[in-house]
Image (cartoon, rainbow, N blue to C red):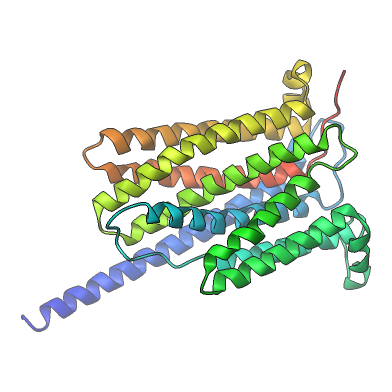
Length: 336
């Protein structure tokens, strides 16, 4: 009994852990599939009855944008949590496997797809012969698309190197490129718009990716004290990130929907309807974050805060999908 008992128990524990891991993988794939429905089906729902016309292939573009944003969040969050962990004394050595290389590969594919659309004059190419790679160098939007492709490729190489922290440079290049792309020079006050998008996207990537990475790290640790310390550090920074996201997002929306027309455009334009859906989701995420923070401070087991935090991650995934949809929809008319 003394020889076979521990072996049997270890085998059972290993099998149970394997089944739990498989269940989590299936749940993750299911959630990713459901999240993809938002950019795929969202344009038709948002545009219904508005009289607006969407660009060709808007659903595919929205999906690619959502994948690109998610690919930015994952490595940014891992770098963010690595920095938080270094500030904690006596933490366990265990770390979850890095998802950054896979995220960089997904971002590279998404950026490549978006660049192919730009190369054909914002039309969806139906063959390789329609893609004009050289034409990308002749336009501002094309050069920014190429910058994102190369930045994700470099980020992936950095993630596989011995110094994964060097990903920060390529990831920052993606954020800058997205900020400049979203606000062309023909726009009124493009520098201000790009600055707002830069702040909004940076803080959002750290918030979403940081929470995902923190929860994955806690899953590897067995120390309640270290886990509570990591969640506490993240929660304090996340409060500042949320404030910056809210301020920059509201300001950006008001630049495109003047205050006197906001109520009308929130219900009569595709952009406004999607902004409204995003606001509702962010509101739900904020409630979950406050619930997790309260448990962290007052509950007998601080790690019970992981329960609302996990739901918060799922809701943030929906926010990312809606954000991808928002960037693909036609901008509202600035009513006087």
